[in-house]
Length: 455
Image 1 (tube, rainbow, N blue to C red):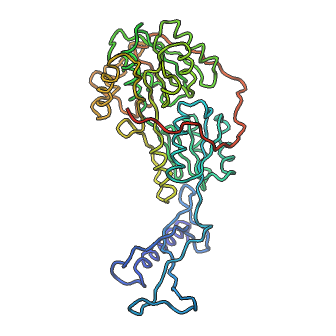
Image 2 (cartoon, helix red, strand yellow):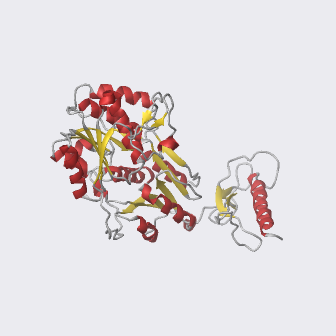
């Protein structure tokens, strides 16, 4: 008997047995009188070996729990008012009930805030909503990702949240090599049997922040500091720049400096250079909130991908744009716990609440909130597409034709800057021997793990 026929024969046999047991008692016709509790079991072949699919994953099926005759303390059968034997369903043995623990892998430090801060808000919400234990390792290099996963698994984690798009390929490979662990990967990449990937349309809220920056600049020169490794970095910068152009049109003058999030010296040099160029408003898109704090020390107005802008730059922030990971992560992990996991490549937008705005500072220019709310409401309702042409790049080449709009998939692939970016500079230096993680496992939280209300 061939291998595939054996598999098909045994899967069919289990399906028929399940169908028979669902109509209780026996295989009688008609609907069951009550909903039958089920348990998930592996499909096995004639020799009792697990049956696997084309991906090497064990094929699972659901069968009813067995019924047990209820007896009294003396061992006599318990009957109902009609004299019929009373049955109850078996309890699953405690060892068959999976206990889930969630481990987070960070490429930077939790204390750096920004995107990692948004993940920490979600981690706290997972504990509150699902009652699950969580922990994390930080400062993990891409080359260290497999070791970080192994460390977390050894600590009891069977759900791994990959918190950087830099890890997307590594998470996919780890998923293929692991059948006992679920992966949730930030970056909208491939999915797998135990792998969910997700991202968000952060360029939408960055676009609104660009309008706010244009309304608050006096010099008409606006700066951007960005880490080239951030999620959809060109899309976010261009979304911001297009927001600036909504108000300033041809006068829009944006300067972009690149720096690595893990280098405070590069960040300081990049910000100082933007200030020297006349930028009086600076937007940061980094894995750290250090540019926000540095701009505040320099008394420069600032916008960044940080949910706690009022806390870290109370006098200098205009607004902020940030990810709200909580809802999606809680939903995905709940589906794993409830055994109805359905891996997907999800991308949330303003309407779904995945991306949000920080409330505008009262110290901002008068009318900032009103003018930005109009654009925000249009985007939220789906009436304003950020990347609608005509849009040209810095070389004057038309990238989006007049009247045309880019799809989200194409926005994710943007590797060019819009025409209103007048000058760019790079402060990124390659580190020959970067210091990676020591793989210490942490479970404590920062003082603030609650995101502000949506604007």
